[in-house]
Image 1 (tube, rainbow over the protein chains, first blue to last red):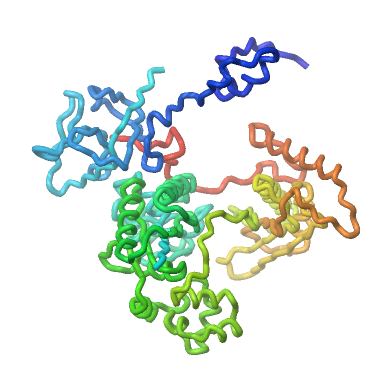
Image 2: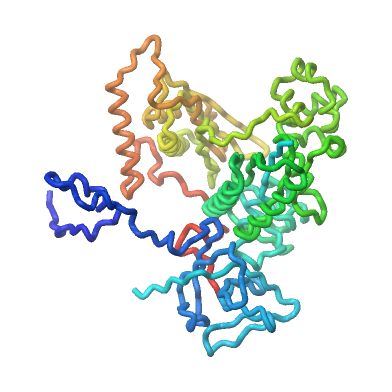
Length: 143
Length: 422
C-alpha cells in the first residue's frame, strides 16, 4: 500500500456547512464564544432570487448589452412575476428567438441595445413580441 | 357553499416543451414515452392532426413529420421542475391542497363562499401560473372532487372560454351531467359503465338519479360515493399527505429481441438491482417480487406475455434476496424460443423496515438482519459515487440507458442547458 501526502487541510478550504459542524466538539475546555451568535452562511440564492417559482436563468450570448454591465456569457436572473416597465431590462421572445434588451414603451415600442454597435429594434406591425420576464440581476464571471 | 378546485395543466409535457421554445408557438408537438416508443402527450395542434394518445411512434412518424410536426423524447427533469413550480405557486394561494399527479392538483377553497368569488379566484390562479411559469392550466370548481373533475372537463371543451368553469347550482349541475357520458366520470371505468348501461343509465345524470341503496348492493361503496359526489355531497376528502409508494417497477423495452434465458437473466438481474436501490431509498421492505416478460405487440406470431411472482418468508430489502426471487420467477415464466421485446420487475406488498412479521416456523434472526442493512447501505453509498459494485448475475453493461434521441435541453436544472439569448 502506498500513501500520498496531499498537504494540510485549512478550515478555509471547507464548505461553510462543515465549519459550522465542528464548532462545538473542537473546544474541549472552553465553549466557543461564537456559539450563541451562529448565523446561517450568506446565501446568494436569497440575495438574487425573490420569487423562486417564477425565476429562470438565461445565458447571454453577444455583447449588445455591454453598457448595462451584461457581458457575453453572463447569466441573467429573470423574474417572470415582475411586470416589465418602461426602462426595464427584459428577456423577450421576438419572432421565436430570445433576446435581452432594454424595454422602451414610449413614445414607440422598442427594444434598446446597450452598445452603440447595435441599432434599436422598433417593433413593426405583425412582428411577434412576448416579454418573458424582467431581468433583476446579471452574473458576469471573470475567472 | 364550500368549493374545491381542480387545477389541471393543459397537455402538460407538450406545454413544457414550449416554455423555452417560443418558435414552437402554435406548432404541433408530441412527446414520446421512454425509449421513444409511443406518443404520451400531444399539443392541441397535434391532436387536431389526428395523432392518437398512446399510438406507437413509428406508425405516425412519417406523415406527422411531413406535415411539419415537432417531436420530443420525454424530458422528465424539465417536466418535474416546472411541475414543482406550478405546485409551489398553488400552495402559496390556499391553505390545503392535494398534488394529485405531475400535472393536477385539488385545492381546498375554504376561504371562499360565493361562486362568483370562486370563479374570480380561478381566473387569478390561471393567469398567475401562465405568467410566472408559462404553463396554461384549466380550472374546474365545484362542491366535490368528482364534480370538479366534470367542471374541468367542461372548461377544457369550452370554445374561447376563460379556461375556468364553476359548477355550483343544482340546475347547472343537472344540465351539464346530462351531456356527459357515464364512462367520463372519475372512478367509473369501461367495465362499470357497460354494466350501468345495461341498467339503462347512460349519462352522468342517469347515474346521479339512481337509487343509492341499489348502487351499494349491486356495485360497491366506492360507486356509492361517486353518486353522492355527483349530487354535491363531498365524500372524497383532500389528502394533503402523500401515501408512501405501494409498488416499484423497473422495466425496459429491448433494442433487439431476446429468446434465450441465459441472455435474459443478466438483464432481469439489472432490473432487480435497480429496484432494490429504489426500495431502500423509499425505506420500505417488500414481501413479493414479480417478473414480467412480453413479446412485441406488433408481430403476429409467437405471442407470449408471462408474469410470475416469488414470495419472501420475511419482508426484505436485500438485493441478494430480490435477485434470488426474481431468478426463480423468471425461470417459471420464461418460454423457450419466443422473441421477447420487453421485461420488467415489480416489487410489492411493502411493509416498513422496522416492522418485521415473525414467521411461525422460522425465527427471525435480528443479528443477521442487522448485518444485511449495513452491507446494502454500504453498497448503495459506493454505487452512488463513482465506484460500481456489481452482483455476479448482472449484465456487465449495467442498466441499458433509456434511448432518447430527441430530448430537449434540461433548461432549468443544468448549467450547460440554460436557454440562451440571440
